Length: 512
Image (cartoon, rainbow, N blue to C red):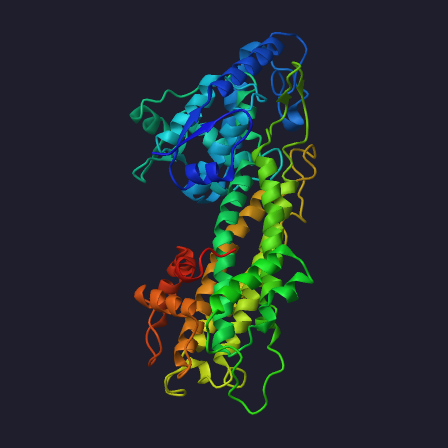
């Protein structure tokens, strides 16, 4: 099994995906263990002094003014975990919780948190055992960390609360730890706070969304090309020299992908009406500009993610010179903004795909295709209601594009008076990515059917490869009306699993 070694300098996006989705094992490097020990010595020395130090010998948040005596500090650390494990709502997905735990471990191993090596090792042991804490949808404002979600994870380390075992059953965390020979941790000064105070949930969801969107943006280039072909559009607008004079990288990449898909097509540039089109509709002609802008948005989001993956987010932090200083690095604004920005781009990409689908179904704009791509229009409704479903998804995506990060709601008796709402931004982006997949699946379904209804002219080899692959995957072609939901589900699985891109790349080579 693949193993990810966590050191002091952060992790990569591929590390996160390997642990969250691939079940990779986690090990602590010798460098990390040494850094953990050195930072802990600093915390222990401060804990022995009479002067109060936030997070070490004081309360938390608005209660930071109280100095806590040594005999109550272990109870203080237990209490912060128990009281902050206050999430509500549906359970969060397993991959999100694993990313959350792994990214918290990444910060712990930086040597800036003051957590003992044995606590970090227990975090790794829980991940390696396939134990997943039960974390709930609501409980993070994206400031002072993803507090409730991380608290539920810390609760599992203490052997309390509930967790899911590797077999998928939910049991008391203490039972699961015992079954895997893992001793619950007894938290000491600073440790409870250090386990809760990070942007790990929103960052993990950002990393996974970027991975999914990388495939979906390539898929969108393919479905746009198929629609252009089915509508007898011109591929001249995809010429590299046109995109070179507006040199946005994403735009050029999307145009190149579409051009690669359409190479060798006999359908592009033909007209079945008396008045030849001078130019295609925006939804066809401007596909690279819209998809390209989304790609460039993703590039910016990756820069933010890479910086966060290299960061040690905690408050207070242990500095190399021995100081333990309060800071505001836990604020989720940098991550929240790009999560919201991506949701806007996703909504617009889905919107332009839906417009192309509608054009394929409208006999007044489809240039010779039957109404709704029906077998016997009037007797058959064809894909009429498939487009309704697509439109409903796009409408939902527009609502999900409303930024969460523009909101702030004060908490902790006005001590935490401005928050990022980054967790909420991440949660809605996950829904948006799911819905974009479904929207592209409907466009794929319509475009492949439309191409097959064009008789006498051969589609591009890459287009034919897509048609062959999607039919083999259980998505049926033209014909009388039938139960559509299974076809749409099969198309969704085809896009979601990356098979659409694989089918094209067998002909074109790697897409950009």
